[in-house]
Image (cartoon, rainbow, N blue to C red; front, side, top):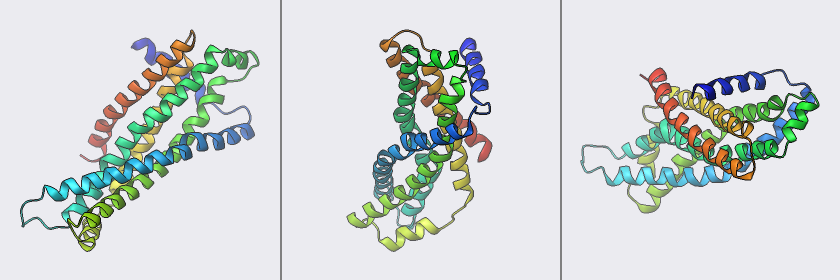
Length: 244
């Protein structure tokens, strides 16, 4: 474990250096926006809508007391999506989708000796391959999470109004009541940290492998597992620091 920590921090030291050519960096950044961000929009949208719908329906069907107002459904859906489901669950989904892709992509370049060829030519391969991915994820993932929040709340409204468990007016009132803008800030801070963990851990496992195609598959699995565990751990740490 100590060896992996040391190797990880040494790799990050190489990653966070000034790019050799700014023009190439910006061009690669746009490519990563597409592959890591835009291509994930579909799965984020589908999961968010159904996740918000399930939260709203479960809340509505578990409110038995007439003393609890109907707008509690909208309030609970909003708070659940903003505080936990969108930043954490969607980040776990992205760890599986994006993390495995990064680890397999960089791992394939390692086993086919493309990274060795870059180093022979004097190119900082860690900076060239990983830095644009880190920047694009930390910039684009908050956009995905904001979209997820909106779609999750919309999914809850759609489910409640379509099933008739509560009225649209009550649900919208719950969305508006007791809103604290800091919850958005808290969620976006978590998202940025999670984005860095997903990309850096996945890139580390892909960059450090040796062997053949079998090791690429193992590196992809390790990238998803370790980044997911770190997301859960840092979710607790950030909640303790930012909310308590």
